[in-house]
Image 1 (tube, rainbow, N blue to C red):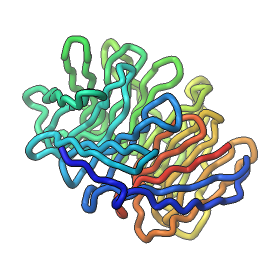
Image 2: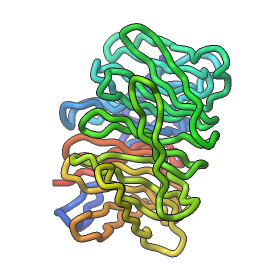
Image 3: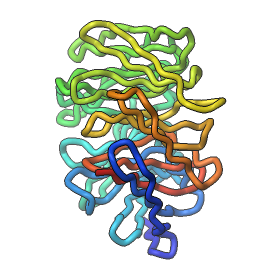
Length: 323
């Protein structure tokens, strides 16, 4: 276990940006050089809580204390290459690790690491992103063409072949616990039937849009980042209706998507090297350019009043605070 103090910590200069619903205050924290943080997950319960991140290039799960700027990194094992991380209802950090070809949990207090290998025959699944469903299972995606579930209570794991093969990427649940995932290469979103594992596929209006990540708002409406098309999409599972909006700029590339507790939609745009916020009421975008080149924000997650991003290109975690 390695600990890094304030000398690598916060870039404490606040950047206040006028926004649609008040000011957005931005603060960045450095993580160890070469960590290349891929995903980030703040613990629930308020702004003083710690923030987990996957140090993909260093085979570790990191934890940042925003109050002090200190980080600790927990090695996950030889050949580890962690991708996604979320905080489960049990308070554990849950990680999809493509290098270990396994799901990994880390205890929030003891930092004990438990590894759940995928079943035989699931080699090189290229695990991507996890999400807990209403059934209590941890569901996950693998870009090599799989999706699956782990029952934390029993350790039982199931793996399924995805429609159209390669591509499963983002995954999230609606307020009723129903789990959906997106396929980047397959260019669709899919609803999972929890007991059977069967899926129903829904195609965006734009062909080959590249559905990278998917996120539900408080009403169960799904928002999708369309990487190839440079668009943000909205899908209503109750009516089957789609809407799409082109991101502003000349060469947008929509990567991460996250919906905050006020139902504002946040997107990262590789083309503009910016984080965007979309207001569904006015159908307008607010842009927050990143002052560091090639920040490469691949994922974002938040809690009330905060959106956290992982800048894999700059070895930083950045928080966007809003009222």
